[in-house]
Image 1: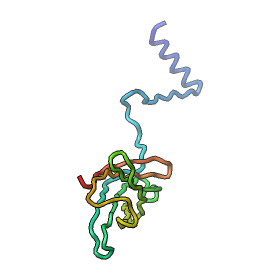
Image 2: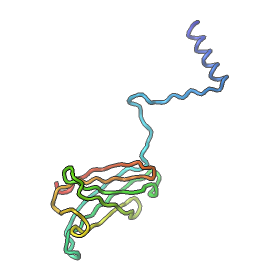
Image 3: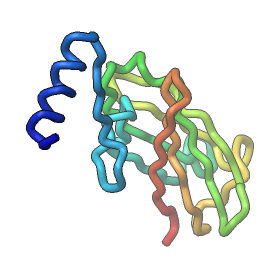
Image 4: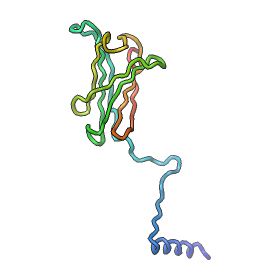
Length: 140
């Protein structure tokens, strides 16, 4: 039998029996579909002296571009590390649009010290548990 007859037979078999052949691009190097419905556009962590509180204030801000809109984001957290040690973990609050932020007074609300070197991880979660992390540094 030649290849031509085998190919014709297979095409006829699949069309007459209603079988569906699905080819999945699961080979190495294939492009995966867009899985994360958000993207951390920008983030910043700063500290400054506040005369009203007579203490340093820490500000954490993140801008999340959400594919499904602002309601698609469940939580945004900031994890602050000094070397390998977790120093503080702070939830951010939704402000307006895609802006999330938190302000903390250094002495009474954090374990941080303005002027020290920290690695700051901004972590955004959607309602399906998918997360994205953006890492920045303070004090370097």
